[in-house]
Image (cartoon, rainbow, N blue to C red):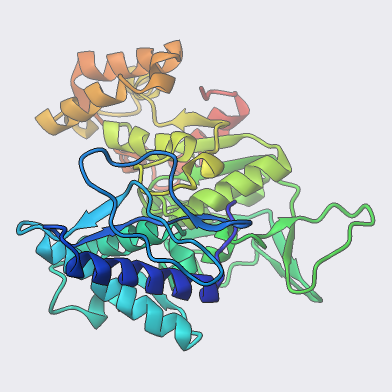
Length: 391
């Protein structure tokens, strides 16, 4: 995990960035420009090794102790991009005030702070991302965090000082929220019990789990949590409620690496379910510089896979009415997934996707409830894991 940049350093970077902008406006440049700052701990702000060949670099103001230069990422105030440009400035102003006050906030609060400016939350999220990219920091260094999205329960205990909590003693049906602490340099780590020196205030986990089960959908996760599936098979159950946030991915990565146990992905039998699973394995969009450190490359496809759905139908357990026809959008997504390098390198994955495409149907996990309300957690999932039916 990359270290969080201090508030003092972020405040300084914002001031330098705005200084660049002011000089850009006062210079002969036709279009006011903000350019990303790269940073070296020993030498301060430095230029990136590569420059944008289409734009001249803005003026480079000098500091008494450091030289400030610009990197390749630029935010230019064009006619079409003026709102995007002003959105970033609003975020930078908000973050500057936030960090000076020693406070933190959530992405949702930023949106509501400027609700008359941003059309929706994704537009606000983009501005926050671009502000972080210009400052060459992670979002957490801005003092802005996502509201907890992921949930976790099962055979896991967490100790902080003298306080110990068990994740199989559920405070609610959802279990425990996965918070942004998993993204920090002091993220929870394994308690080894070999004379290890414990840091004050840091969380240490212990577990006798045999598997980590990552569930695409919150509804299926809640069923497993409510049925206490982790008592039937010693495991940890996690959901990111669809495409996971960074904290959930960090949690899965850390637990799988430290505990060295299999990670099994449970998702709908459709292209978008597999996309969620692959996000844990290979990362999401290009938005985060952390993607490489968050990849749980050992995650395996537990189900629901096309071959498994076919067996259930052939055994007379599922009627044809639970199968849904692939849409044009599904087929397009399926085609793009078949071009993913990892998928292309896996004969088993290719076979499953080709089966889905050839048959032209998909199925949701909830369809298994047609057999019985407890069939998923009481029978199918347990048998599938114990038989090693995952790829």
